[in-house]
Amino acid sequence: MTKGKIVIMACGSFSPPTYMHLRMFEIAKDYIHTLNLGNVVGGLVCPVHDAYGKKDLVPAHHRIAMLKLALRSSSWVKVSEWETQQSGWTRTRLTLQHHQDTINNYLSGQIEPDPPSWLPDDIINLNSLDEPDNLMEKLNGNVQDGVTVKLLCGADLLESFATPGLWSDEDLETIVGRHGLVVVSRAGCDPGRFIYESDMLYKHRKNVILVTNYIANEVSSTQIRRLVRRGESAKYLTDDAVLAYVRQHRLYGAPHCITEAAARCS
Image (cartoon, rainbow, N blue to C red; front, side, top):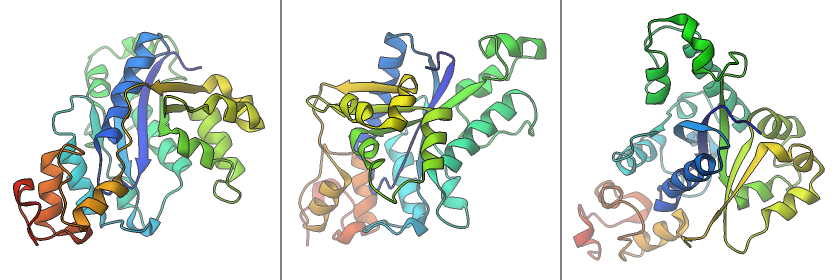
């Protein structure tokens, strides 16, 4: 299991983002630090390309805008627009690898000094030292290991690995074996059993961090979209600024209301 520097990344639709999407980062970071499993130096939210084609997937520029509104108070989680800027849908394996390579190339001075906007601040601060000889120390004594980008997900995504045809064997081997998973599940779930019953996951079990969320939060994007579509209040399920954006742009069938206070207008 990685005990060096870690960036945790969540990939998905985020249409719209919910408080649970954001809480997962805080829960995972606390768990990793409390158990001394590594040093989380950043968090990334990477929304999918429009070509993913999921139902109720609004255009990427809206999802990015909502994520930035929801994350405006975060000091360590950023939005990466990289996947939405590609020519089409990108496999999760390639998204993880691109961000990990970019981070480590930046630290080793192999890319231009002007970093991409999503690069975690702690990574930029690490590389701001003038003495290149300090790079070995900055990367916990092993330049080759560098920073690992791990996939942050819920137990439902973990269990989707067993769905025939949904994930390629090569992708799963790379995601779990090379990057690793941070799985946040609700109390009462048993992702450990699922890992035990999967030969691939069991082989890489040391590279899977299981985190139990004991503070129940079952809010989903689907539920928020339903409330918005019906003209009912979704306040306290996501950031007020996100709801205001949804209604201002009439997303998900919302009535034309600028503020949540007017959420019940028709």
